[in-house]
Image 1 (cartoon, helix red, strand yellow):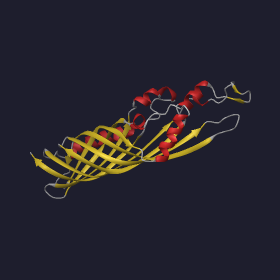
Image 2 (cartoon, helix red, strand yellow):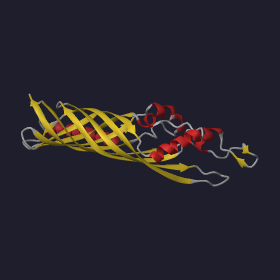
Image 3 (tube, helix red, strand yellow):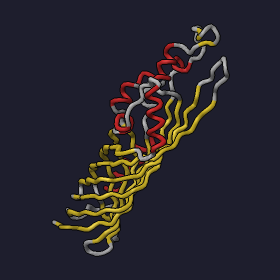
Image 4 (spheres, one colour):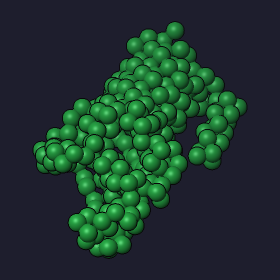
Length: 260
């Protein structure tokens, strides 16, 4: 993370030295966008202890109370990869950009089951499902024109809000109902996924004509804990673990509405 931040600030300083700022312009446009996110969530050892002394019907040992508590929350060591694709629109005032994106996202989640000393139940299970989401973002940026070329670059930093819309997979909904019916405390889709992100990166514009341009952006982001994740923080070995991070990339066509 520190290396990424250093590279970002080095880009800003280099741009200030070698490039000149463009005119102030209002513009708007839209295009394609995608995300690639990942996370690793590791439970504390106390929540993975299956060596409890309490017996069920005098036959098998039950997990410890903390472990049973984590199981009721549906928490295990987890690896998660999220990939999404969709479209977005933006409005730009040279030093500020706001945009909204709609994406279809595919979530692949691998749950690592702790070893049971009685039945030796260890291993992993993988679940995948699709969610439709929207991202609302605002960025501060400082564009620089590269010499007399048609290119300009913009170091960017800002925030985005991730909003889950729907889970169209009926099988996922049915399995969720089954889990809740057995008494497990499972959050709904919004409680689980809605959250804020901090993002930074770089954008590049290529001027096609006097008013028409192409814009590409590459951003790195770190998801902030939402209310549900804050409530679960004591389960994880480090609070930062379990938080998603990853890339956002986009390609769009823009139109310069007015130049001052």
